[in-house]
Length: 207
Image 1 (cartoon, helix red, strand yellow):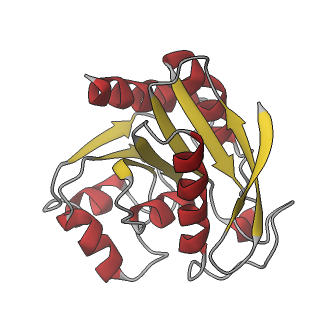
Image 2: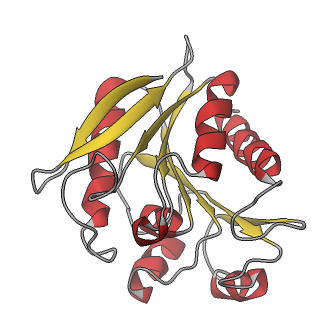
């Protein structure tokens, strides 16, 4: 693990960290859960992915959204946080320019990831996305995008039932849904299953 930073278009310096294998075949940018409810780049699901994916040949960049821990700025209710995701994509692209980038987010971070339609992104993996923190039109745009999307949902999600999300994304293009049995929104005791699903999706994408 090595510390780094990302710089947003509006001039903020965001705290970030890399975890990289010797010969990476892909890059993921990890977007953490809600800043106003204790979410950081060290939250349980993000940390599990950050620690495990390098063993699958994937370089991981995790970062703190504006106003979280060592990142400058203030929480902006999802309005400006899209700039933070783009800043992380900038850093990932600069460090590994030849590798495909996947945006992976959990909860609030999943919503921010799905709303970021940067051309450098090859695919999205959204873990327990509430689909509430951005305007509905942003999710419609993501759904109409032909790039692949994996949604990993929790069977017993406290915020939105998987059936609600499945109904909302039923017409999305190139979208696959996996439901983690027995999981709550926080995936306590189920993080290994999340890692397995994400790693398999990335391996399948690599061919």
